[in-house]
Image (tube, rainbow, N blue to C red; front, top):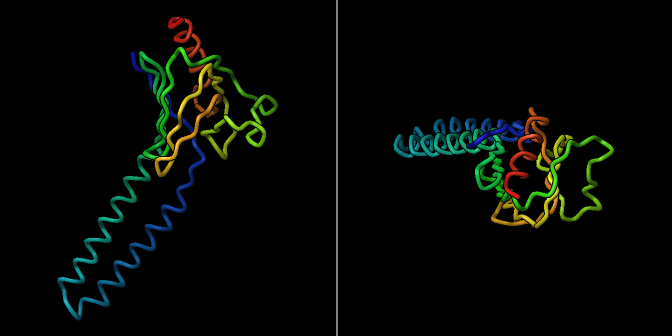
Length: 168
């Protein structure tokens, strides 16, 4: 049975909106500049700008809907096309609620990743074996502790524990 949880992330939308405004302004400026020279060039530049806006919107739309999916073999974390991670149930040691005092310190813990940054995580998974997290530009980081923020944290922790015990 597949169960999905919505992750909360601190990804701001203002850079995307700013880039979209610049592209839209440039499209109008290009059209006004080149329409007197060649309407084909002007409309071609507008079409390229619209394509850029569509790609920007799609990337923002995907990134703004991060999910944690519980599958039969393990869990999958997807934050758009930027961050991806799969962890088998046998690799999960513990799943715990996080308080400000119990959160791992990212400055001293090298194998830790907070996926809710800059927000405070409310769930932490401590792993028995390292997992690879795919980062932007196809970089990877091996982690032993993954923290994230969920709306339904307690039900997710219960689900982790139930599935983890059934896989042992």
